[in-house]
Length: 82
Image (cartoon, rainbow, N blue to C red):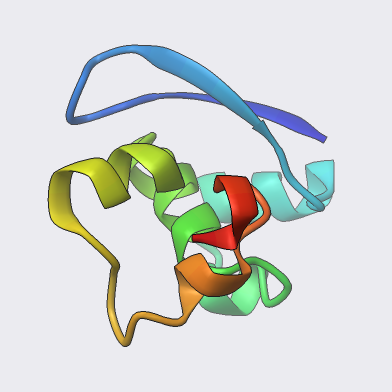
């Protein structure tokens, strides 16, 4: 599903095609659980996009790799997964 968000960093609106359902997005909007529980199939970069609108590429450009450094290795939204 194509999801649109506005980045808290750049204030630009972008979209990502994420493997999520409308029901999951509704649960997230209702704050019906932790983002990692509602979207267990998303990597950290994809969850960050849902929360802040920051794309994985934008995050990497501004902050380098996130967390333990593994999410960008498998993130489909970064060219070559890096």
